[in-house]
Image 1 (cartoon, rainbow, N blue to C red):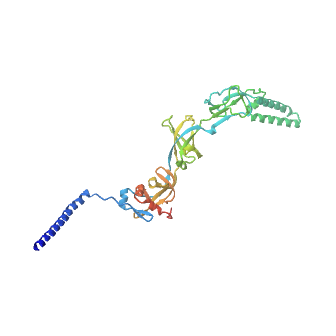
Image 2: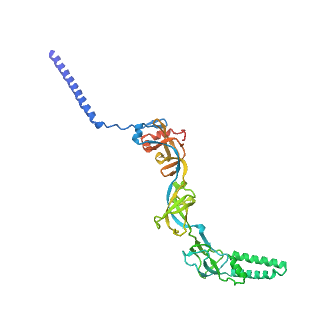
Image 3: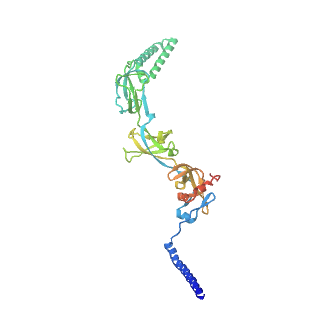
Length: 391
């Protein structure tokens, strides 16, 4: 019996020693393993930003880690420089279409080459018109009768002769007869069978619709002449920049034909519609062209400088566009940030004008906005924005 008891005790002692030895080994090697997992004192990953009611809590350490900077909303002088490409065209106010108020035949052409330079008062062509010749003869007859009756003492006949003369002279003036030509008829000059038509302006011949010997009707367009002392240039502005361009703003234009030369102009008109499927708007520029260097049909690069205006503005880096709704993070102090929806105006370089949602003096996140929103549960914060001031 004693031998059985002694054997049982030996087994218990052996098991106890085995368990205690195993615990000792685990304590030694387990401690070393824990030290190996953190070589060089590797820091744990930073915790995510904490959500608060309607906002986000960001610690000072997290702000430094994410590069989050806070700035003050201010009133700023905003101006922008827009680049645009366009094509030069004739200035419509300087275009003149030559028409006659009588029908007739072209006898001789002096201006017969489209593109040729013309000067004001230079002969264009001669014309024979039976209607014009008849009017000249009527005037010569009316003038002779009046001269005979004005000293005759017959007031009734003199009055009628004067009225007939005035009517004949008016008809000639409607046919664009000058005072010099009318005085020549009074002096006994010959009837102008071949009347001369002169250029009304200085410019270039753009269109010629008659030939020597051709017949024309009254009111038909015979010539089109365009002045070049001033030209138009239609440029294309993207839809997003339309609000930034105003009539009267200054423009600088450069052409490949004249490298290094800058031509000054201004915005004269903004068309009230977009140009087809391009989703661009045409803006008309006016350029001075006294020497005629700028030629219609040339393409140029324009730079439109918008006038400076004061407005509440924020850096573009402060704005987060989520689902088409611009958001900024308002800083309330003590690490507490509130997302706020804003209404943006036009963009001026690195700044957005703010139409609604912010006041001057408020503090917002100006750098690190995207990282801040991606690390936090922004949808939870914005979901509780309803009813908040400025929302």
